[in-house]
Image (cartoon, rainbow, N blue to C red; front, top):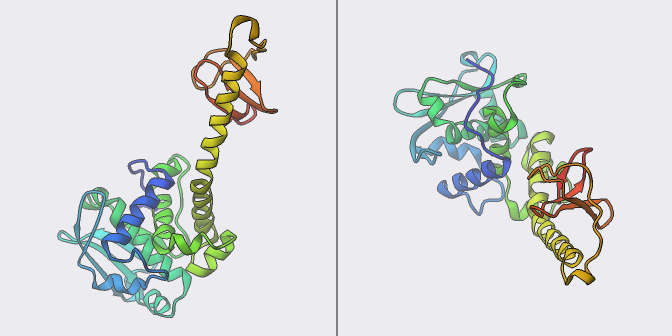
Length: 261
């Protein structure tokens, strides 16, 4: 049994979208605070490979000595087992067991191919070991963590919360999971604003290089190549930002940790 598996790559945004699709399939779309024990009544779930038979059961703590939850394939169902003590705490609304249920559902939803091939995907009681050789976007554990947060959180409510701490407290998440979710939410809100900034940069670029020959401004290009197209046609616009004349990519900074605008 491994602590982590290398799986098909998914961005955080893609995982979140899949979690919302799972919510919709299970008719939780409008729920603010999901009752995770309702998953015990579910006999099919939606997965990235289509609907699959599913079973969730609580077992004695002695059957899962080192794990809070474990997802496998029993030959018919994608099977998730949780410790009875975890179920009891979930019944009381505690955060860790709620996240355990959603975390294991994440494995069942995102990684059925690996499960059907014999993989066992646990949530360790002492925390799962993550391997440095597995990038986050290909880590089964990372994906399950992002999925669990997105599955448990109602976006409309979360948009009215101020910090990752607020999200973690309201939905019973680890601060790390809440931070990833909150940063992703802010990115989605910010994206249209970023697009507008890029459009302004492009307009400024056209103003600089457009017009007739006598009206053109002199452009001072950097000696460094563009990290996107490789052409040495980078010039400064709007303070510390740079644009490539060849491909029109905009950088917030250059060299010391490039970030596209």
